[in-house]
Amino acid sequence: MAKIFEEDTYRKEIETKIKKIDHENKAIELEDTIFYGKSGGQPGDIGEIITNGQKIEVNDTIKSEDAIKNILKSIDSLSVNQKVTARINWDKRYKYMRMHSALHLMCASIPLSVTGGQIGFEKSRLDFNDPEKKINKDELQKKINTLMGNNHQIIYEFIDSKILESQPELVRTMSVKPPKIDGKLRFVKIGNVDFQPCGGTHVKTTKEIGEIIIGKVENKGRMNRRVNILLND
Image (cartoon, rainbow, N blue to C red; front, side):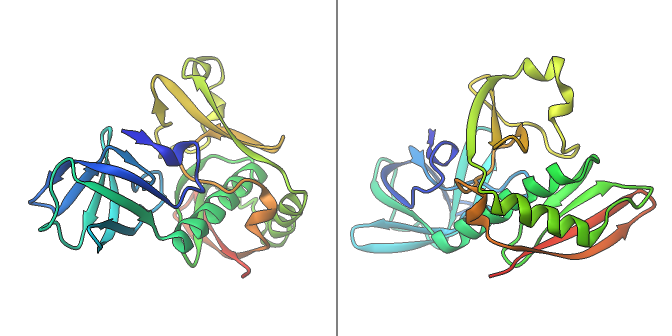
């Protein structure tokens, strides 16, 4: 399966074929896909499968080992090797791309270990190991918005996973396993600001993210602090 979203996050639809059907779970696997499977704190894509003039809703997309499975509203009219058009819900995908990219800037702006995170449509968050309460909400918001206004390019690099043996500090998120693709790690590079392994979808430049607002900064236990972020649309 070619996971087109790994190199082209802006592709909205493709022509492909159905590779497998899971009747019990109303799920299909496509030969090639643009649908991102839920993982790493990023929700799975929704959208539609179009065939023979019929549109079938994709209610969720999940990652299962090396497979990407689309959960459909109905699979009654589908068969293996059937040609289909796969189309993502672009409004949701693009919002997730902007959110995910903004979280990378937050991560780069706070020199603390990340203990968890979640990307959402209305707001997103990262949890940091911050027992000394060093995070300052106003300073953080100003710093991230300055970085976004500088319009840094966001690109992907595929590097031998052995790089982590000599530079383990490149993995900032303690709760997410770095994604491997054909024995290599997919790194996201934001100008000279951030460089870390990540399998998610991102925009091309920081300017596309727009202005952000730092929401609540919450204490989650003795050591963890949760920082919520919103896009100022």
